[in-house]
Length: 194
Figure (tube, one colour):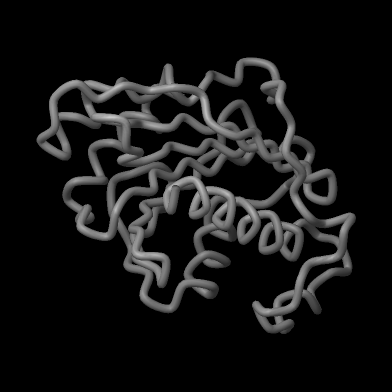
């Protein structure tokens, strides 16, 4: 359950931060404390139907359950489509895949496409680094990537790239015991398949 909440919180952070970098006159959002709720028009909304631009692949197709199982040394890992988050304010459309073993969630992959938003991968990574003080750069994944742990006891590795000239953020979130070395091949596999 923590992992699903972490994915939703991550999507909200990205939605807010990328809106700041979209060229709109919303740069004042960066200075607002994180305890302030975003305006209803900027809040992500859940949608039962998958969305995404042309050529967008489903997250479960980008990262096989077997790869996750190998990374965490657990057999019998399964995957299923997770929540979809859309943000009309910045064009962010996030799809996710939830990985489970023995009836418990062990991680999730989220892929967020920013259709119509001209944010650059470096700007996405910089915004995340600003929001996550303990973020560390990760080399060799996408056009920029970071790894961090948060107060919800989760770890995340996020990579930014351009796919068919559309900014895309790919992130894997799992328990805090997942190290950067465990997550890097997972996100790299998803980024390379995207």
